[in-house]
Image (cartoon, rainbow over all chains, first blue to last red; front, side, top):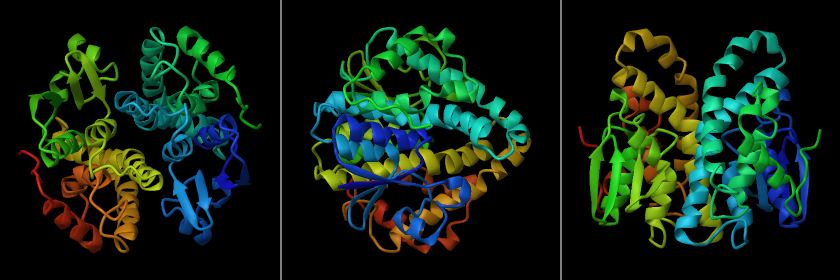
Length: 200
Length: 200
């Protein structure tokens, strides 16, 4: 039985839930609220010294942080993570793209607009994330104009990782109207077996 | 024969050179200068629509971006990338840590101080990266106080990825004096077979 320490409304955490549900793996979810300091307690830092959710407890006392490492761990030896050397690396390519070129803009803009205690004070900072976020969405559109999924011609953890914050990009102020291939892909992801909505 | 499109002084690109040299793989290096717009040409964007170095040409016309995906691809089935499920995920954990919690502070501060055309104008922005950079170094120190290497009790691509910008952190204004375990680990990395210095 896996245990997840996460915040349900976080895209990074929702990736983990999506993989667990897609693979029908049993798990317990412990809700953690970073906004209330729950990732800065001594107990939490003992699990992840970097002080971030999600954390997967693999076995008693064995903790794995980093959402994209967790989903690769869970998907090992399943269709969600190809074994072929090049296809596997393509999945990783999109996972690193997500963490470096997508999440810091789209997730951060959403956080500042929706979860920050004083969103009005953060407006200029949130606005500054628009250009990078739209650039990431453009890279996704470019890929999805020619392919159904990001890697390996099938649904993989790369799609799950990019779905995490893309499907709630509007909450970060992003308009997906200009990205028809991205919107069609969101629908394809939502049609996958075991798909689970982000809890609200 | 692999071809690398990269900027030699970039830590992200140097990771790729370190893995190629450690594995004694033949390669050709094509120097790309992002500061002169060379990652924004049509030819470059055809290789990587995200417009970033490094890019690995695996075979004619097959291009792989994202430094950490490239080094996993190259290290597949070698001692630099463990096959064991948990050890493999631990490597990924540190690779994602590097791209999300380390590079955006330590590499960006170095870029602004050393490579930006007008560093004085960027001083406040560079200074704003200090807190996150020192936090990342603290997480590394915490790990290395108890282990010789980041993952799997041996030298892996996780060490190479974190070495990329840590060994030039001083150029970003970071003082490693408070991080003795990190400094000892830098020395261990530099003693590995096939170690290659960043070209200057």
